Length: 139
Image (tube, rainbow, N blue to C red; front, side, top):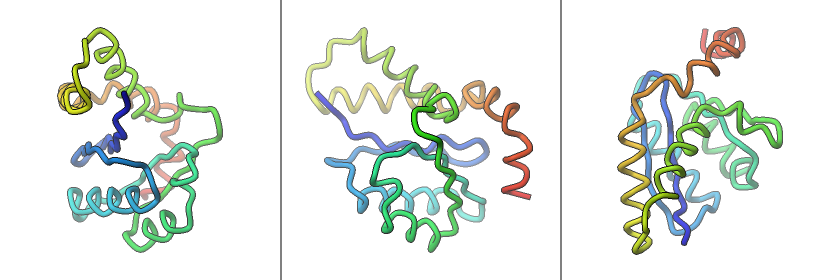
């Protein structure tokens, strides 16, 4: 069973999670719009891994149009993305739960995301490691 999850783990704004039936560039663009809407007036820096939908012309163009700064991680480096630690925690919870349906899976993921979303400990090490790079982007 699979749940296409889109999550935005904010260090100083509003977090966001939602589910889509697929992960096409159009879905990513819709999610970018929601991120900006939920974080009006804030600088949005989005750290992304390497699926084709993240690098698509459609996605990059939409991000630029919305004023989102995209930071693409090198291949095979999930440890550089703070949200991956959130996903690891969520996966741990899902792994010990008898999942009854796709909707039940989505509910578990959302509940666990909400439980851990305010913990900046997931990002603390990342922020300490990349402080100078972050500062150069947002200052």
